[in-house]
Structure formats: structure tokens, C-alpha cells
Image (cartoon, rainbow, N blue to C red):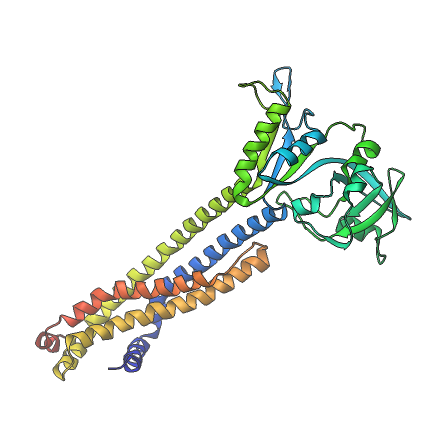
Length: 406
């Protein structure tokens, strides 16, 4: 018998008890749908975390000032000022694993243009900021090294600020007032959206850090943090070690004494988040896989019942010339059709559930071809594995005993 004939016989046999066949497939349908939905949910969360961390910048590290003790109580990181622009220059010159460095200092300001105003944050940086954050200018230009050295009153706007102040007007070349000081707008940054803490990254204006220090802030000595980009993703740990060693030397911290700064490597955070999401994905997939096994047991049970019900039919087939392998193949193909058909229905249902979660609940989902392929193969394997015993039992029947069966 060819594959077409075998498939036709299997469908005809299963069609005799449609309700029972559908109920038998139900376990596989639920199992496969759960696998697709859970894996897509895990993959979507993993992709979202990766995108959010990637939006922070390329191979980025942050250096924050240290903490202080007050009345025996330790304050949080950054509670004491210990970093300055010279530290950033030294990191740039003396750390081979570092590519770009920018001192950062900020101040909350009210920005005014004409009769429009917007309260935001002025973030001071140097000309390397777009490369570190992988944040390009959408229109106009970013400020230059000369602007930084001369503390020029120039600004590049985030999209949120530009949208509120310049509705229908090109911001480039316009003059805004920041704390009553005129600033020339050089350009507008591309959109970044929210970061993983929910902060709107586009609600900012970028100005030279020297301008913030000398004209918008009371302190011109310290910086609030130093932003660093390593030469590669693999160089993040090396850059972290080089920066720590250099700053300990510059700050004359004796061996055994605590650092007065903190270095945070976002690449490590990304790897930890990715590992966590993978573990969660495997856990959810394993739980859904249990449903598939339960469905397979249901197929075995129904196939054993079918063999018992059709014993006389098996005897007649053997009497007219069918061999044991033909009987085994017939029942095995019926189990395979049940599990594969259930798998295909389950995939469709799983995709619909994933779209519903993404649309209705706003949860990030990502349906991958590999999860669909694995579901098809696994459901087919369930049919073969759990259908083999009933098929072998049918093939082992004695034709005479089968014909006498009532």
C-alpha cells in the first residue's frame, strides 16, 4: 500500500468515530497550543529586554560616584561627588579596552520658545555621546569638540521636547531660552522611546557638559557620572577592570580600602536578563510539554480500545492476505494522523492565543519558525511513540482467534 492509500484508510477509520477522534486530539491540541503560546511569550519578553538594553548604547558601562556614611548609615551610590572631567579624560587615554568616553552632568530646567515652555532635563555630555548611546541625530547636527571646550550655548533636542515646543516649525537654527539664557538649537535626536525603567528618553535636551557646569549648575568641578563604551562586547569586563584600577590610582585609594566609585557593566545585565528569560522559556515550554505527553497517553488509550473493537476486522484482513506489518502500519498511521492533525490545529490555536495576548494584554510575543517546527515534530513523535504499542498488539493477533472474537 502506498502512503496515499494508508492515509485514506486511516482517515476513513477515524471518521467512523468523529467525536471520539476529536476528543482524543484535544490533549495534543491543548499541549501544542500551550507550547506555541508560552514559547512565543518567553521569546517576546527576551527580545524586549534585549532591545531595551541595546537602546541604552553599545557595550556601555557607567561609572558613578561612590557612597558616603552619615551617622553610621551608608547612603546610596552617587551620594558623594568623587568624579570629574579629568577622570573621564584619563579613562579615554589610558584604558585600551575603552573606545568612547563622555562625562555626564545634568540639571532640571524650563525650556522656553516663544509662548511655549516645557520642563525637562538638560543633560550635559561631550561630542562622543551619540556614538556611546548609538543615538543618531535625525535632523541638523550634534555639537562639536569646540562647542564643548568653549562651553557654547547650543542644544540638541529630544523628540518629546521638540514636539511640544516646535509644532509645525523646524527647530534647527531656532533660539530657545534655558534659565533665561539663549541657546541655539543645532538639531533633533532620533526617537528612543522609554527605557526599561519607563523613563521617556526623548524628554531631554543635550548640551555640552561644560555649559551645564558653568552656566546651568552651581558646581563646575564634579560630574554626576561617566559614560563609557568598550571596544567590543567581549571587552566589557576588561574595560571594567582597567577603569577600576585607573581610578583607584588617581583617587589614591590604598590597598584594602573601599572604592569611592562604582562601575556598572550593562553587558553583564543584558547577559543575566537573557539567561533568566531563557530559563523561564524552558520552564514554560516544559510545563506545556507535559500536556503533550498527557495527550499522547490519551491517544494510546483510544487506540487500544480501537484495537479491541476491531479485532474481528483485523482477523478478516489477515485472512484475505494482510501481513502483520500491514496491520501494524495501519494502526500506527491512525495514531500518527491523530497526533499530527491535533498538532496542526494546536499551532493555529497557539498563534491566535499569542496574537490575543499581544493585542489584548499588550504582552510582547514573538512566534518563531523553530517553535512551530519543533511542535510539529514533537506531536508527530508523540503519535508514533504512543501508537506503537497498540499497533504492535494488533499486529500480534492470531488470525483464527481474531475471527472468533465476539
